[in-house]
Length: 444
Ligand code: GDP
Image (cartoon, rainbow, N blue to C red; front, side, top):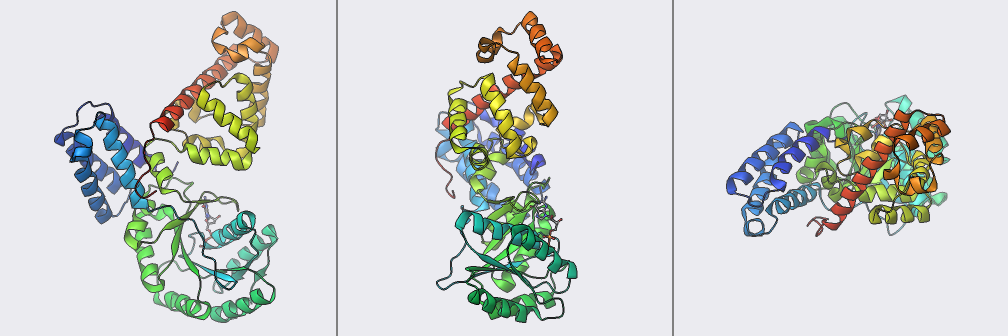
């Protein structure tokens, strides 16, 4: 999971302070020191860390904590607020030009995910906002880049404008604008060339394209895995081009977190989207508050529920959410949910969003495959109605009967019962978390 190391360290640090009835200045000092080290290790820019720690200390030592009834909780809230603030307010809006087409220019280093993100963004604009984008291939240095974009265009069934590798990128961009107007495209997304490092030729070319088409948005695509380096890259691009927003890619990988936590502070430009995988629908709005909660092990229940709602029948998802909250979740629901989970994507990805899920060893290795789902289904179906509602009555002889009925073994039945209990525990945590959530962060 992304931020794993950072999350683990921060969580063990704040755990020390959570339950305390009294928090001394010394406690805060120690906690701040540990948070500082954890952030530095996660490759967060040192100046950013310094400012953050100062703010946390200042607030934590202040009255708002010392006089509160639950100082430990209060401190964590401060840490969460400050992390949220650091990553910036929520802002996944895309500009709309007064006179179409709206022009979006994608910039970034080679391999950052520009071309992929161009496709994802086009997909999002069409799917969510009913737009009709034209994709433009301006990376003439890497022949494969044009082809890559054309392939994406075919997959998306969307037109791609290209003049091959011989043409000048500025001309391509200009001609693409004419074509977009002629064919009534309301968005033009320009995929530009990248280099392995920031260099002045590249910047000049990008500046020329910018001058030629006056983009409404310039999105810098940054690979979240590149840590500290990403910050330097973002700084240069921003200085030269005055970008309007950042897209962090590869947040599905095991990034340490440095880029996500530093970029906003250093460029003062919002992180608008996050790339969560290679597929064309894996671009999400970036939610700083949810990300902060996730890093602190408070889970990301909202994203999970949203995911459920986009992938699963909405009414079913609502009912499920209600059941989770009211704790009236039974094996019948479990069965139904297992089937739906398949549609939602890899289970480990979903588990990352659940509070405390990382610590539940039993759940960490759950893999949903067809065969296993079939077994689970068979086990649940071999239970009586009462057993499904009230699994606690399932004693040894019932287990034997269920195993026999489902063609499985008692240990498989046991495992399922255990998973079910773990799941319920998580739901309980989730419900408590929602209750204790308190006010929104300042930046949120
Ligand atoms: P470009 O050189 O900036 O245009 O980068 P590409 O779009 O070609 O992407 C480089 C590689 O990163 C490709 O293999 C992509 O599939 C991959 N990639 C892009 N975005 C993501 C993401 O959000 N998650 C993951 N896991 N891979 C990504």
